[in-house]
Length: 146
Image (cartoon, rainbow, N blue to C red):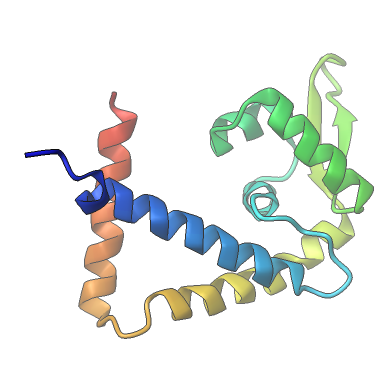
């Protein structure tokens, strides 16, 4: 009997991730006067939690390569969402700060995610939603250990 990849949890998860990413992308693009692309809200989320982190810290936290962070930041700087400044103690280090515009996006991005979340979990009970979240967190932890 052949292994049925399409029947695995991982395949279903990959399909959900792709669909969710597409839904979030469309929703983020509907935010007025903003060229926010999917993935950039994750970078903003890091800065809303802790402004002024280094580019390398952002890459580590987002689990993306340095060139990807650089490209994201270039786009976001051009849109006036963030600014990069040299570290006061080490000019080789670049720190990233929210601009007023980037800070102002927090509520709209949260509302956008809430809308997509409600769509994604429609028909699930609170218990099912909590169980799904717990299982997804467990899967991530399992995969990070290898």
